[in-house]
Length: 319
Ligand SMILES: Cc1cc2nc3c(=O)[nH]c(=O)nc-3n(C[C@H](O)[C@H](O)[C@H](O)COP(=O)(O)OP(=O)(O)OC[C@H]3O[C@@H](n4cnc5c(N)ncnc54)[C@H](O)[C@@H]3O)c2cc1C
Image: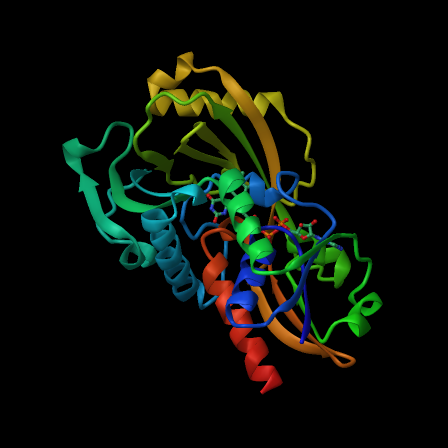
């Protein structure tokens, strides 16, 4: 079958990889833009189901976790590592969150184990996916699997539907214009990358209700990512210096040693948010159209689970 995967981000690359793994070989990957110029390259990325909704989030997250843990153990070039870290909480939480059973070494910390001003914390071990390295590595695997790569902006799926027997639509926020999906909206995120300094674990802070601040510190091999923001319906992609100042102040409050580190890079990305992830198959003339977009703040976290699920749906549709 002649198959097109539209979108060169985490969703498109993972879907293309999955299609190739299932034995389809006439696979083309087409995108208007590629890493590092897309939101997938901005993601920190830590495995964590954030700003996303769908009844299958747990199952998709679990499947992706298993795959990333395997890469961490066997593929050092992938840029995936298992890292232990902490999420600080503003209330004295005694109940584990829904995702706790998917992660390793989950513990609730209370009392003296928790630094002020926080009242409790979750400690756990998850994959950290260094997206610049990981996306390049994943692309290489898809290339080795035999896929063709085309750079092209597509105005409408009808324009290309007769050229392929199946199209996987992995266009993220681009699907809003491409298929007229007005339920898709951006959640703007800004991050600051500081120089590395032997950082061990990750640090997350539970988001305050209604706040657009989202505070986290994620260590990478070549730096440390300090976040961030989560501003719904904000389309601006220029860097806001006042936001960077706030991000650094919050990071230093958590880890004072970061104050002396030089800034390496500041980036902005728009998370493709939707009331629920769209994983659906329909027909466009003779073409089987498979949608895989709208992963919000969890596109990396859910990538392998969603790719497997949409390819399953595709195979059910073709019988
Ligand atoms: C600051 C920040 C931190 C984040 N941290 C995390 C994290 O720690 N963990 C996590 O899981 N997620 C994280 N995310 C979310 C994650 O980045 C997204 O969920 C994910 O990257 C979405 O991937 P995607 O492939 O769907 O979209 P994209 O990366 O946007 O890729 C879409 C692709 O489709 C192409 N395209 C779109 N429209 C068209 C068209 N009409 N024609 C041709 N091509 C088209 C684009 O060119 C691009 O190649 C973070 C996001 C931000 C902003």
